[in-house]
Image 1 (cartoon, protein in one colour):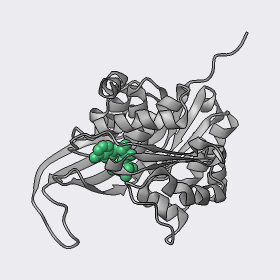
Image 2 (cartoon, rainbow, N blue to C red):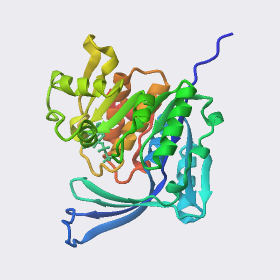
Image 3 (cartoon, rainbow, N blue to C red):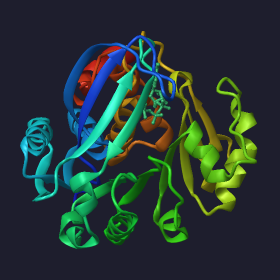
Length: 317
Ligand code: ATP
C-alpha cells in the first residue's frame, strides 16, 4: 500500500491586531494629517498567510502566540473561522501583538509593529509532531529568529518544502538560508538580501534581465526564489534549473483597481503555500498567487479580503 502524499501546511509565526487609519496621503516625519476612517482587524503575517492558504483549500495549522486579551480572542476566532487549526496557538500573559497601519488613497501603506506575545514564541513551541503531515512549512520574520530556524529544521526533517518569506527584512543566518527551499521576497527585501550594490531590475524588465540576480541568489546557496513586484507582478528564479529554459519565469500582474494593498504579500505567500501543497510547480503556484493577491488588493483589510479558489478561478477564466 502506498501512502497518500502529505498535503498539510504548517505556518509558524505572528498574529497581530491591525489598527488601520485610512487617509488621503501618508504623513511625512513630524507631520500630522487627518484620517478618514479607522478599523481594527485581525492580521499578522503568519495569521494572514494561514487564512489565505486555508481559504484556498489548504489544510492549515498555525503555531504562534497571542495574549489573554480581547485582541487575542479576535485573532483566534478569525483564523479558526477561516478553517485554520489553532490548537497550537499559545495564550500568554503578554499583550497580543499590534500593527499600526496607515493606508493612503492609492492603497499605499506604512506599518509599525509591536511584537507583544509574538516575542514569547520560543523554539520549544515547535515540536516535531506538529510537522508530521506537513507538505509545506511557511515562515516569516515577525517572530524570533531562533524559533524560525527551529521551525525550518523541523519542516526540513519532516521532508516538507520550507517557504521563507523574508519579511520584515532581517539578516538571514546561513543555516536558515540552507534550510529554505523557497525564498519569497519583495523587491526591497531582494535588494537588501543581495547587498546595497545590487539592484533588482526595473519592474517591467524582461525575464533575461534577471539572470545576474538569479546567479547572485544561487551563489548565496538559495535554490528557488520568488520576487514580488507589487502591481508589476512577480518573477520566479529557479537556481537549480541552471541551463534549462524555465530558470527565470516572469509572472504578469493581474490588472485590478487596488483599494488597499495591505496584506497582498501575505495573500500571495499563503496562495503559493496552498498551491505547492497541492502539488503545483513553483511557477504555476506563483501564477495562481498573482491572481489571489490582486483580488486581495481590491478590498479593504487583509484576511476578510482574501479570496476563495472559486474567486481566483473566475478571474483567471
Ligand atoms: P505587502 O504590502 O502586503 O507587504 P509586499 O511588499 O510583501 O506586500 P508586493 O510585491 O507589494 O508584496 O505584492 C505581492 C503580490 O501581490 C505581487 O507580486 C502581485 O502579484 C500582487 N499585487 C500587489 N499589489 C498589486 C496591485 N496593485 N495590483 C495587482 N496585483 C498586486
